Image (cartoon, rainbow, N blue to C red; front, side):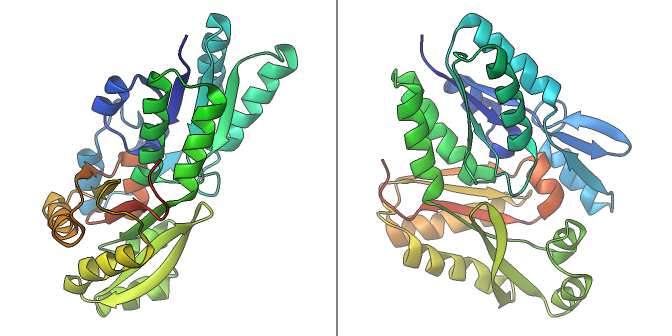
Length: 286
């Protein structure tokens, strides 16, 4: 029996990937207009972005303990090995909740083949690591081999992204009100990255036209073998700029495979419309 991979909806993978690679999903929750929605199940990113453009407040919450209890128990009863690759613990309490449930189950069933790993990644950077693990699972790899591969890809996954409006990062507590106000006035576009699972400002660029070129320079400086690895690009309802960045990458590095997706509802609720994310490895693809 092959190992089953579980990911949460902050991986920003579409249903196509979950179905193609037989990945199970645990959904975080989006709170919008006084209602709760399961990310990736009963709300679309487009709905969230449209609401944000109209001034709606969006909030999110982690996967519930009950959800993990149900999922973990079902695989334990089937005696099917399960590896849950989790969204960064520095950005959500989802990993801690899953770990708590795993430990509770193993107190009564020490041999339960359930494993919970904090990948310390987010969005499509997290998603690419999940896809690599899922491909390995389909090939019949063991839980240990899968976890080792997933951690390698996660540890060496660069997350480089920019937001269109600093106001959304302010609402999420990532920048001060003054920085958001001044940045908007001066048309400053921040470039950020993820370091040890945490969102870290990297640079400030004056004017949106320079941002994509600078992201490409960072990619050239940090990336390894960019021609032969899978590159991820995602966007907050701005496919045109995402495709523009993809064309620049192909022209400069000769990259063969680029995955372009919309940033999911949970991540997008904090980064806002117009965000562009770029994900690549700083070590050779395994």
